[in-house]
Image (cartoon, rainbow, N blue to C red; front, top):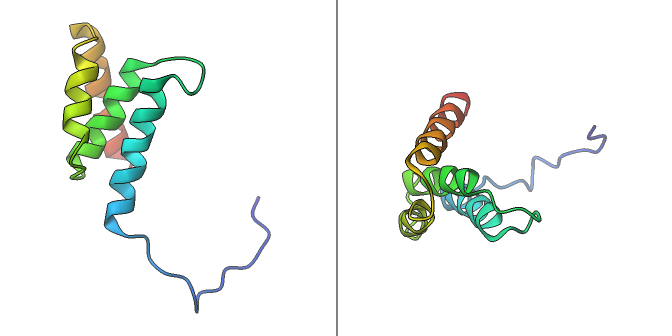
Length: 88
């Protein structure tokens, strides 16, 4: 639990680009196996979300990952992305 203080005088808002970059980074994380496991469904989901937020490279990465996936896996990734969007 956070037990510090936030200095609202010096706080700056997060840029809109930061969110798409974070989503893209999540896609890279799962596509590369940095967690010790490659999860193409998760990678597709995050690249899809980054593309929807306007990240320029995300759509190409999503296509690259999709080429390695089955139809069922792509459907699962799309379902997971929609579920994430409804919560966030």
